[in-house]
Amino acid sequence: MTLLARREMTLQIHPAGLGAAVQAGVIMSLAATVGLGAIGWATGVAFGVLAWSVLAEGIRRSGARSWGPADTITLVRLALTGGVAALVAEALTGRTMLMTLVGLAAVAAALDAVDGQVARRTKTTSAFGARFDMEADSVLVLILSLFVASSLGWWVAAIGLFRYAFVAASWAWPWLRGSLPPRMVRKVVAALQGAVLVLASADLVPVWQAQIVVALALGFLTWSFGTDVVWLRSRRTLATSGGNL
Image 1 (cartoon, rainbow, N blue to C red):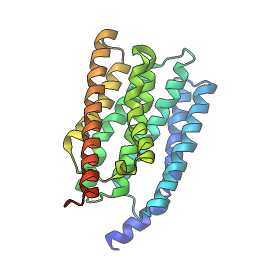
Image 2 (image 1 turned 90 degrees about the vertical axis):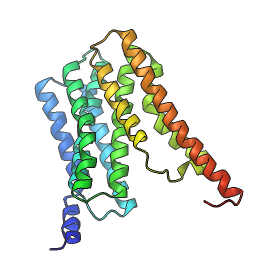
Image 3 (image 1 turned 45 degrees about the vertical axis):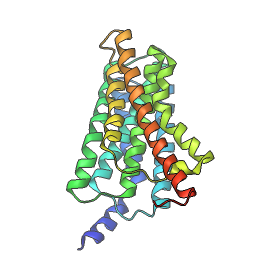
């Protein structure tokens, strides 16, 4: 059996269905251990329906014909994020199961350093996998930023909303959808957001210290996005002026 044939066969696992199953396992495990109220269950179910529907549509639109081991790791990360979302929703009712929330978030964030390496080592990197990885990161950061914002100040939510604001801006200015050159610093800054938010969620340092650390992370994120916007703008200016690209 050729490598292509094995990949195509692997795709028959129906990733969205697998994700829904893993998500259900996470939610039921939380319900059986720490307990979930109605809002936790509702959030977990809503997250699952939205996340795995979007994944199925993303696979269809991208025309992806393979599903590698790194994609499965990203899928697990996203399912764990659904558990984090359920626990954050529970926190709104005053039931903050902090150790469990931080533990799930920490594992999900740590796996972000794994899937890329697995993809490269197994030679199964793909445009779809890279996009899936990025979206899974963005969702976890958004949820954690909303949770941390409830104790440090709502300005923290800007960390999670930054990428979605960028996407919204690209609807008005299509040149923002241009391809960006690979930059290691972009990946480092993105990983920093998750790590800092997990640390802030753990409530291990005084509020003022956590605010400083999170503010620095937001500053780096602003700089990273700003650098990308300037680069895309310069490309657009060069293209419209007839310069060589």
